[in-house]
Amino acid sequence: MKLVYFARVREALGCDGEDVDFPAAVQSVGDALDWLVTLSPRHADAFADRSKLRFALDQRMVKSDALVAGASEFAIFPPVTGG
Amino acid sequence: MIRVSVQREAFDIAAEIGALEASGVGALATFTGIVRGGDGVTAIELEHYPGMTEASLSDICEAAQERWALTGCTIIHRVGRLDVGAPIVLVVTAAPHRAAALEACAFLIDRLKTDAPFWKREYRGDTALWVEQKASDVERGQDWDG
Image (cartoon, rainbow over all chains, first blue to last red):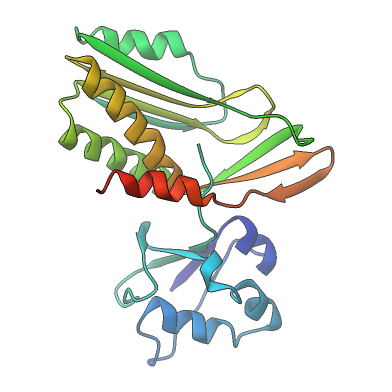
């Protein structure tokens, strides 16, 4: 799956995205985060405070209980601050 | 008529109002957001999620059109680096009567602040800090659900 990162999350990870193959146990957005934090200290740091993270699957905002199966793009970013 | 645009360049407020005026309505309302100074801020920089941003702005406009009798709405949001005092966002609504135009205009900017994937960074000289989402903005966005 294609992961894309924005703003503070992008900076914390040092990249604007990556391709990952989630293990079968990863079903929800929350499961995906549980797995992503094991990838590196950078990931652990970037995803440590989940209250400061928001998610989109195929460019639609979702909550952490949304299922990732079937999505092709999974975005992780901080709360939005436009306007 | 829905028009959304995410762009680096400045917008022409008179031209945008004129485009909706031409639809022959009784009321037009506009909101313009300006880059706020104070607290040492010299400029801001806006990042967004290309594709999702435009789709979310269109969704917000469609939600407004379902709720109020609008003949048109326009949202233009700038991205990139903007100096203090620069116009950053424009919302224009057109309706047969003023209440719909005014309420929909407030709805659109409130929802934009909670639903559209933009992120703002403030510059104080060479120091840049990401802006935190305000709880009051989230509450205003949710108030429209009530």
